[in-house]
Image 1 (cartoon, rainbow, N blue to C red):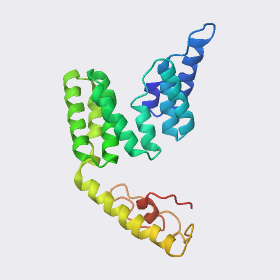
Image 2 (cartoon, rainbow, N blue to C red):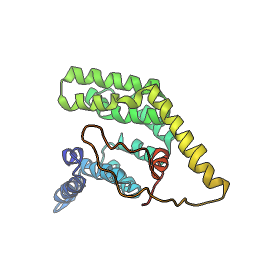
Image 3 (cartoon, one colour):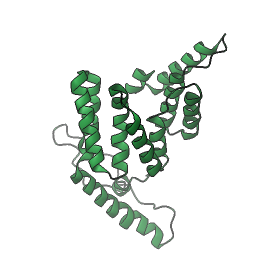
Image 4 (cartoon, helix red, strand yellow):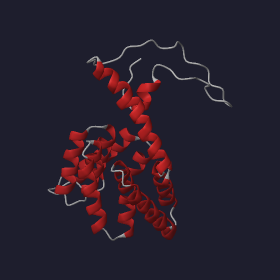
Amino acid sequence: AEIMQINGAWHEAMEEARRSSTAFSHGSDLQPPAAAFYQQAELHRLRGNFRAAEEAYRGASRSGGETQPGLALLRLAQGRTEVAATTIRRVMGTTTDRLRRARCLPAHVEIMLASRDVQAAHAACDELETIAEGLGTSVLHATAAQARGPLTDQAYLDARAKCLKLARTEGLDAALDADMLDALVMFTRGVATLTDPLNGEGGSGSSTTLAAVAGYPSVT
């Protein structure tokens, strides 16, 4: 199920995790394996079904399994960044096994970035790369490369903050608040342009650009 999830086959991964729970529990008094609950929780979290994710994480805990780093990432997705940061710091502070730390470090990076603790994010990336080098597995190398991406660069963080300020705070938010509006309606610029394989789309922006930069929904 975890491999299916990594490959983007979320529906198949969910079905596999559910089959594992059912096959284990039918005809016995044993509880379904904690790993099956955890995998279901992860998929619910990624799909944005936070209530179902919360219940599945509880199932993993009741079955004697671990709920991290998934539960910390759930708190982050719920907007509870400080709780997520406190949780993942506690997890990293009490975890010594290298493989277990490698499993938690990508979440540590993501949550530290959300908390604006770039130094801690860099340190987590460094550790993940060291573990990947020591164990020599391609999956860990790929995970470390993904975590190290440009999202950890201060230049990126500064540019992102500036874009959000201009497009969201001083842009759409200001326009909506000034006239007490709930939404903005505007014309589109016509049919989509053809994409040049060599030079790209060549567009100069559209009615959806501001919403996209601000991270707000745009219905067309």
